[in-house]
Image (cartoon, rainbow, N blue to C red; front, side, top):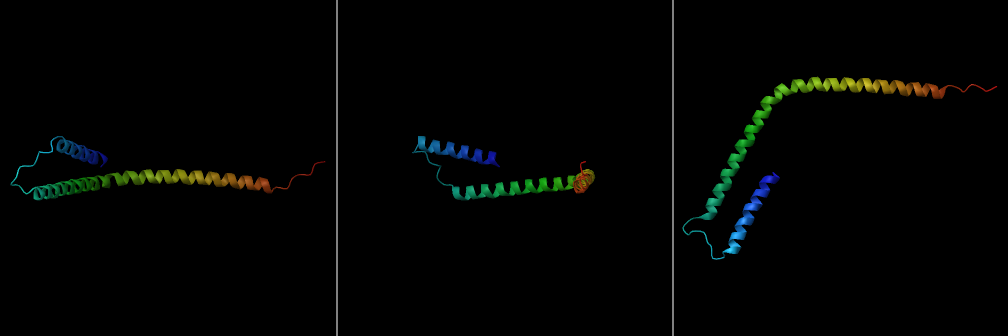
Length: 107
């Protein structure tokens, strides 16, 4: 998105520079330029909408295959987390049992 904005700003800057360099430069008469600009924006909107819809449909079709792999990967990660949590819980229980043992009297 940033690249599109940069391109727009570059073109707008060049147009403003051209208008500043030649103030007597005008667009040819006889055309409704506001209608032309509106039609260009409408065309750009339609093209971007179709392109985004196409990308959405393509990613949706591919996600069905990727979901199975993601589920398997997710299960493996959850199992590793369960093992780590069980080990940490066992270590904490061991530390607590050692801390609660009465100290042996010194003779």
